[in-house]
Image (cartoon, rainbow, N blue to C red; front, top):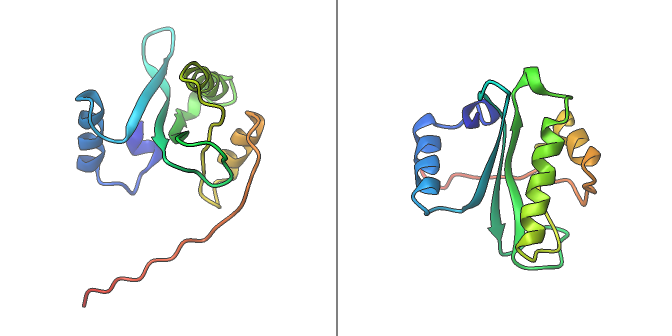
Length: 133
């Protein structure tokens, strides 16, 4: 699912991040899966704890690093159930806010966040310049 969410990412890096999570290392605090009745995974949400997040007043703040539902399971409440589970996890940990982001062109992601009660706090275009020759 991570490869489907981030198709441009290096598969070996994604595998390393997954292995680090299961070894208790790395930035992810929790990963939740949603399975179909036959046991097939149909959605996932990954959360980290960040020292800060734009628009948030508390620290640390739980941050949705990845949120994905397979295409055939979309618009059936899977994404909302995953987000509700993430919110419950954050509340149980004593956190008062939850943060997330999505790419500017990801209109479906923006709508999904809004449907789950997120408020947009800003937009950005990020820049990079390589200094190597």
